[in-house]
Image 1 (cartoon, each protein chain N blue to C red):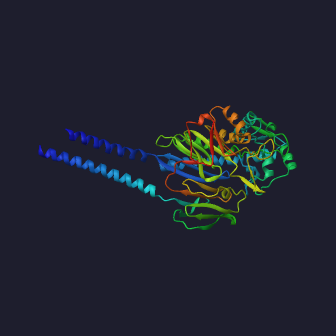
Image 2 (image 1 turned 30 degrees about the vertical axis):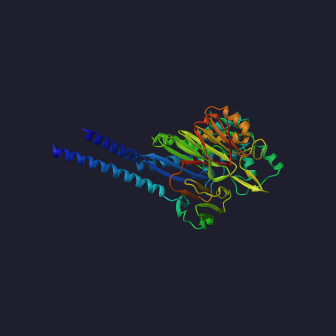
Image 3 (image 1 turned 60 degrees about the horizontal axis):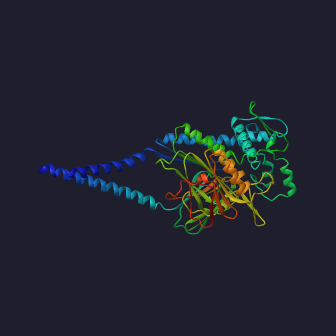
Length: 129
Length: 353
């Protein structure tokens, strides 16, 4: 009778521990996702060219060469970025202006160049523009 | 006995927790993006197998490539004319002879002519000469003279596009006429890509073709996709969020393809009746099942303006629309009320429907 009671205690304690561990793990995972800092990713021809942590970024300009001597200039300020200059014909990338929220992007199709803000999931899955 | 109750409830808790984890682990997200059709195409699919994820993404992108090759208006460098697109061949043979084209090109043209007729010509795929005059699609954009505009306009008339579905041919009656699929090709390609994903058994996917969005199914957790609509004067902001499934959301505005001259903004959204920019609105969004229809319909809605555009949208089955006026007043069709949330963007005044 006594050992039966002990067994019950062990089972209860074991299950409680399991619950605690699973909560702790899910909490940690969520926290890690929330801490996934805002970053700027620069792509040329679909390949990652450079990754920059935006909240810590200092003001600067990056000249990104494209094929055949073409180029785009990315301007970065703390927390935001834009395509400041491009030698492309349509200037859509420059017209887009500053971007800072996850999912936002500025695209230069003629130079096959784009910048995108990555980070913790925003409140939308994608943006119609 | 009480203890057993406790144990059972704890067990249930553990099982439900691990259940969540297992369920979300089954479907994995695969994303790829490629430069096609003069823009960036992003596709995200959910499937259980990495190999399959890659295969279906390739299939979907192949559709964009296929439609682009059929509809490109300008010859690609290093490509022979024999390999040129249906649209190039139709345009080269304007006033000369009918041209044999693919079933896709025929579909696109018939759909476009249908909406041209329905909108009284405020959408017109024969706008090519006017777009060329303004320099859209080319490198030098400038404001043309009224005389130049009149001359180009004499070549714009969708009724002079002769389609022979039996022989699969298309003929532009006047020399100098040219088709421009800028207002329909991306939508049609998106629809074909979505079809390919569905045929491959994909239940959850998101396609964003340069702002033309198609939400296939729901999110993997069964909730609707949430599609943001860009603030027309701030790339950093949203004006609204739409919750949708199996639906296209396509936005047009005067803020992407435009140039400024003498402090005035000239966008690519040109009224086929005047050859000049429509200025009543700064943005329209169309929400409807077909991506082709959504892409096309933005143009007549934008050109017709807030009031006539609203009447036109309301006359169509299963079409929702949001209008942002040049005065920053926002109106929308009543059928969007349950899908639409506005962000608390104080720059705009929501009027309703």
